[in-house]
Image (cartoon, rainbow, N blue to C red; front, side, top):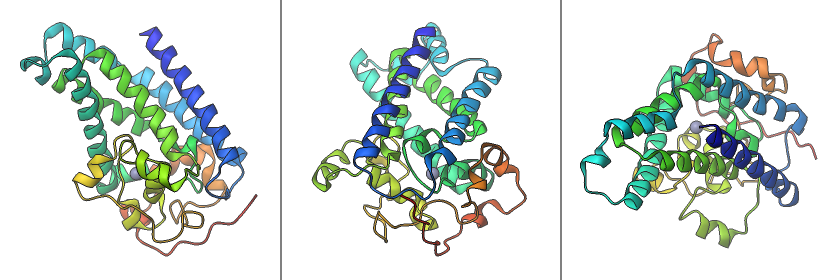
Length: 280
Ligand SMILES: [Zn+2]
């Protein structure tokens, strides 16, 4: 369990460093705010989420997988599936569960309030990939834990899934310009930054598309896929119209944002966005 935490932290730090360098070399967009106005908050949220999960959750997802293994629980154990197949099926079905959760976060008003913290980032870069309200981290843990027990996912596959999901989230949020030909090929296998940026549009109909974090197939399968945004990637406004100031990006504001008085879903209606202020 200790090793799992170390491996996850190392992969996170490594992928974040590589993405930050790549963003510096091949940026897709000019930033609206300076990094110092966003990064401490985004990284503060992931830290707060990790602490909350450790304090509140009685067990990690991996320990639930070990529990299911010890008791022989789970659909995959009822079927004569070879180990390699069980690993692949676990990763694929856990990814489907996360897709389903993401759709719900957009459809249910109080869940949207929590998830809106992620969407209210006015720039989207690698750190946006881990910018979630601590309560959303806790909810995800509950959902993944339930999925792991129902599936009977092998503990190793769960670790692999968590590491993959974290790495692909950092990648697909990156402010990164991939050559168009590469983007076309990569997005057949994994969600690319251009594909996911559509999901961060200020316009509701675009934000309610491309829910995938890891595998791009669920959006195509369930009709939520949008290949391109209406406006060019370089200028399309990102974020949530109500929370666009530098002040709104402070850690304290982000922690309180879901509990502010307003009508959750309504605050994210399709409004024409204000163009991003440019800063080089
Ligand atoms: Zn979303």
